[in-house]
Length: 119
Image (cartoon, rainbow, N blue to C red; front, side):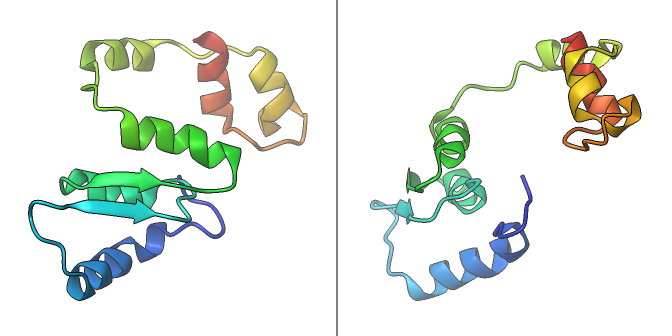
C-alpha cells in the first residue's frame, strides 16, 4: 500500500542501510519496525527470515501488520482465481465510493468498487 508518507520508495535504501550497519548474526534475526505504518519495511525483513516486531500508534497499521507480519498461510490460488473471475456489479460501494456513480468520491476505482460489491 502506497500513500503520502509511505516508506515504499525508500524500501531498498532502508533495508540496505540497516543490513550494512547492524551486527545481526544468523541465529538472532529479529527486526523491530517501530513506526510500522503499512508494514512495507517489516514485510521485507520477514521475507529475509527475520522475526518481526511491528509497532505503530495507528489502528490501520495494527490491522495491516497483523496480516502481513503474522500471516504465514500460503495463498489459495484457486480461490484467488475464482474471485478474479467474478463479474463486477454496481452496488453500495460503487454508488458511494466511486466517481463513475456520480458520487464524486474516488476512494475506489470504478472497477474495484464493482468488484467489492460483487464479492
